[in-house]
Image 1 (cartoon, rainbow, N blue to C red):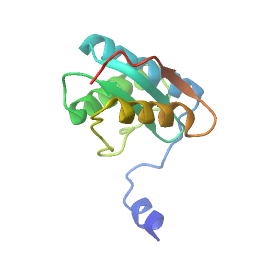
Image 2: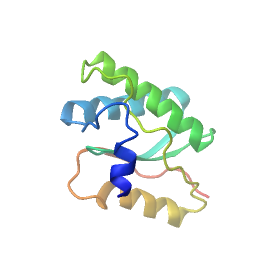
Image 3: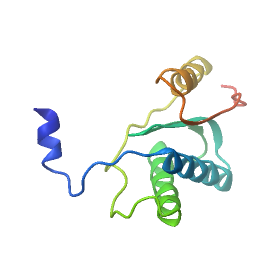
Image 4: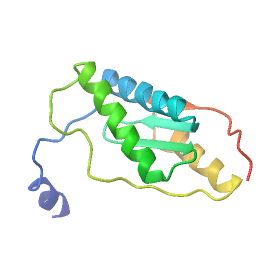
Length: 128
């Protein structure tokens, strides 16, 4: 029932990120993090969504907005798919307040979602 409700509100059909799209989106997210000097702990691009654990001097909503903008440009430049919109209106953003929650988030992003797809992770270099 819920799926039918939201499906009826879509302006475009849903799409799945293939390997090329996942790699393009991953590179775009890593690029914005490098440009903004944000710490990348983990990023995992799945077929239907993205998980990222990022540290930086911006609020999570700003990071999410930048990731979507960079990834959209990368997907369009790569000719992955011609569509008006790629992403949902918002996304889930959380603050991680201590080393334990950071490690748990990285573990989930990297290992808690089944087979790895386009994935990046490094050792956290931030202490709380």
